[in-house]
Amino acid sequence: MNISKNVYCRIGEDGNSNNGFIVCDEYCIVVDTATHPDQTRKDFENLKKVTDKKIKFLINTHYHGDHTFGNMYFSDIIAHKYCRQKLKERIPDYMEYIKDIEKEKFEEFFIKLPNITFSREISLYTNPKITITHYGGHTAGSATVYIPEEKVLFSGDLLFARYHPYLGDADILQWITALKDLLQLDITQIVPGHGKLCDKREITTHIEYLKTFYDNLKDLKKKYTKEEICKNLDLLELPEMGEKERIARNVEAQYDKI
Image (tube, rainbow, N blue to C red; front, side, top):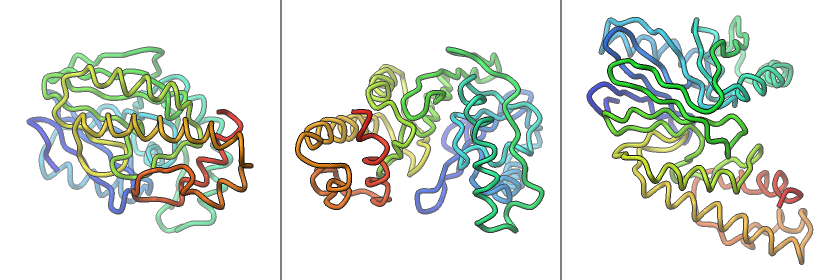
């Protein structure tokens, strides 16, 4: 899907992960990969339909497998230093995980680590210019990819548009701060980590969601155990959205942190 002059994206079906493609003056840059390596190969074929320029960099917005399992097909991968660190730590778990799922989609699979890392922000002086900024929140190494000339942002999993977000590795208060910072950017199109294309209204919606989850869970802890809340998730008073099964996992992950 073409969303601006030089930016394309693939929106995952049924809330699966999204990824993007930036066609620069001399080469292409990819933002995140699909969950299944075979989808990454399909992405390459689709990209050939719009440009004959070669891919130079992949950018990982964070380390979760549904955004990094296609890393094996790229030579140079840019990510925040924590993204590389956490992905390296998770290799044994991820390799065990794929044994139990569709093996034909993971033929000759291996996890490739980012080989170019940064701490706060890195800019690629391409045409158009690309800025990669660390925010944390969703994960310690979560980053965004911003193309200011085209007013496009790849938010990674800082946004789950109309889906319950995954909070398993999250620092919720840092996440809220990150989203408030994103509101200051000049953006007309956002490619979220999951869900359909959106704009800055989704950032505001996400801030309210995270505040509601945090504040309500903090209050509920005074009366209920983790197990009791998980059995009655309506206590959290969250909006109706996709992937409702994530809520219990989020309570389990955040109960002792809040």
